[in-house]
Image (tube, rainbow, N blue to C red; front, side):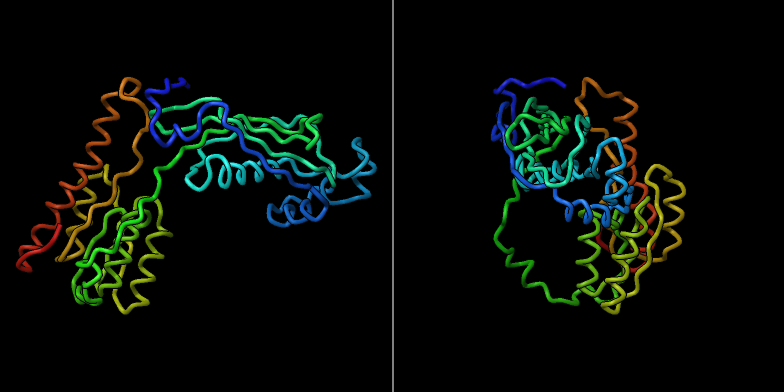
Length: 296
């Protein structure tokens, strides 16, 4: 990973210059070890059985190493960079076992930036609070998300009457998560009947449909693959006339600099995003014309 010069660093990373450090202290006691065993399902006797631990080479039971992974999550999510964090990766090297009652310091230090991805690389450690024992170390990659801008309510949107779309039928592509899921749920609140398009997240599509049904609207999930355009067009055509089509389905986009990408990746992204909208629209148009109009 390259380290960008200060002139290249976006504002989101400039808040965390190289060398920025954050830490917190905590105690890994028996109660914490037992709670982690319950949450993780890891009841290895080396961690939870006092008698077994005493007979082991360690002379006592020891903490699960992955407790430190949970602490790194707290470090990133609450301290460095905090609420705007999106964990990308974390590697761990277990240096020394942690015995119940250990007082530890969980510490992270910014060691590199990636301006392309708005990403921080952190050196992460769990050590004794005195600093003379190292238990776990590793490196984390953390995306710093843009700050959330809180906008004033839109008076036009606020004035829209609930139920304004009663008896209208909408298809939401990519309606199982993210913006598409939010759009599907808002359409349901306005009284619309829904077809919720998904690729792999059927559970998310089902949840959006359950909300619509709870409000008295019909709703159904529909499996659509933007890369299989003939199949997608047939499936949309079989839905019957639509009053509206919302396109929020793009699939995963390769995230790297242009000089490290390939033209085939660019074509694939274009086919799924722009091509997907084109084929969905041409499939929906006949039914919309039959009804005298529609919204895309």
